[in-house]
Length: 430
Image (tube, rainbow, N blue to C red; front, side):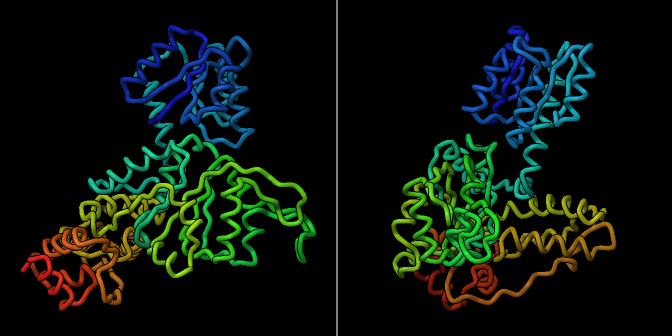
């Protein structure tokens, strides 16, 4: 839940604002001094600060200076009397989001706060403005928001392009670590030789070519979140190095002489069968147990057909802005084509299709002809199926989507027609 810190020595006004925010669905804590504000900020992650300019122990801008000095991304809104407006304007130049003159009124105050919160979310990264409305995906988001405040290591599973990083951002942004760094680690680029240096940094002269001190990923993410993208690609030797620091919560930079303590939350993502990788010796069992204290499964776009058009509309707006176009929307034929596609590449594929359609569009609307899908090699088995109940559900969903056409349903599932017929016989669906 969104939480705001109010720093105001007028307790009557403070209680009034707390009630206004409560009615708007926003939780708020209130303090009366800068000292109390610093105490709260060091213990709790806040989404926004609403601060009086003149406080018993100094100017409220001290809090803004602290925010800037610690590299935090917390919107800061000032409440001020008319005579202090020049000081408030200076604060805005230093990074304050806005200043509001007293007496404060509920509607303009709430509107300013909501706008600041929306801009904060959209600035986190492009993954934050992608909208998925399906019940399946919303249930996943609710689980992510629930586990976010528990400092567990989370494993996010799902097909390539399904939006695992988006879920990782939700976990980070809803945790007490939200104002600390979110650092992404591309495990596919880490070699066994470079793992220790990349993770922990090195001292000058640690090895040939190390002509300066370097900060490692754990130091960059201190207090925040380390996101290991496709952790199954991590070499076994690098897995050993990672396991040690996660067990001991300390490490030594290459060439260093002192152990360094670390405080990071680990989120890992994978699109492969990690249990199979463990069985085959490609992934350490003990590391798997360490990074998979809680599991979140990201549904494929094919499992959530009601997400396709909301996502497409949002992407159209984005690419209109980025490409300086003015495409109005999708024709009925284009919508039908988008909704009937099986999306083997998930949200990433949809993004590429919409971007290309916007680039090539010279009229006001995207037509079916503008939507170009890349051919996908047919697989020999149903993808990402876990058990009989799940198999049956996906087959029924594909048949419904294909209006009973077995050939089209087989294409949606990426299996051969004989395989689909056999599955249908097994489940009594013929």
